[in-house]
Image (cartoon, rainbow, N blue to C red; front, top):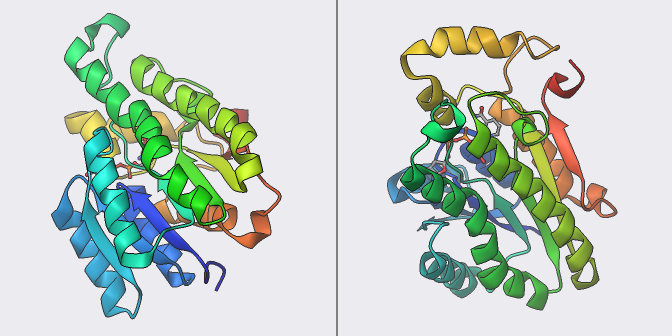
Length: 252
Ligand SMILES: NC(=O)c1ccc[n+]([C@@H]2O[C@H](COP(=O)([O-])OP(=O)(O)OC[C@H]3O[C@@H](n4cnc5c(N)ncnc54)[C@H](O)[C@@H]3O)[C@@H](O)[C@H]2O)c1
């Protein structure tokens, strides 16, 4: 077990990559706070862990809302005294659209959930990690933040910003013994991906597959494996990196 001394907060835990992250962290011995805006889905995943003998806590939280993040952090603190790993995984995507066709309202929500959430975590979660002697943060970005696809300008931009914030935070937080890394996944068949393509899902998959040299979509377990490494002691000298888990999309 590689995460035996880890207490992790994982956001967006109820679905897709987040649910896989939670399961793998627990399988590696971590205690996991399963955080999601939809409490029922976080509870389902947490119950699954508990019935397998794991230690889990399900908490509702809108990562775009400072007070909500503050309440979530306080609840984890009350339950376990603190935490030493944080995975910022919750995010929204956008409907494929030409640049000016995304509504201002949708843009504001996208920025709040995907970017401002990192600020709220910096305000509420980092002090807890600092006081506990350090830890590590993993930000789930996207290859589209490095190599964009057309029609996804605003989502791509949030992921580029996340990568920049990862690097800046890594530089600043090293003296606090907090490592900060990002994972850049390629497309995977999760509810987010399905909602993006709607009825044109099959042609969307076909289009995406042409751009991935290893010839398959990303599996949630691919992301979970990379995150376990980054959270573990094996990565104790690794900070500020952006790890593509993308089947070679960046070199294709
Ligand atoms: N699926 C892909 O193709 C893909 C590709 C690259 C990167 N990513 C990234 O991986 C991460 C996970 O994506 P996924 O595909 O598993 O998505 P998903 O939609 O399946 O899951 C996202 C989870 O986040 C939760 N959530 C949404 N808004 C929230 C909020 N404001 N506060 C708290 N929780 C909230 C949702 O309820 C959901 O459980 C995201 O950061 C996404 O950008 C996904």
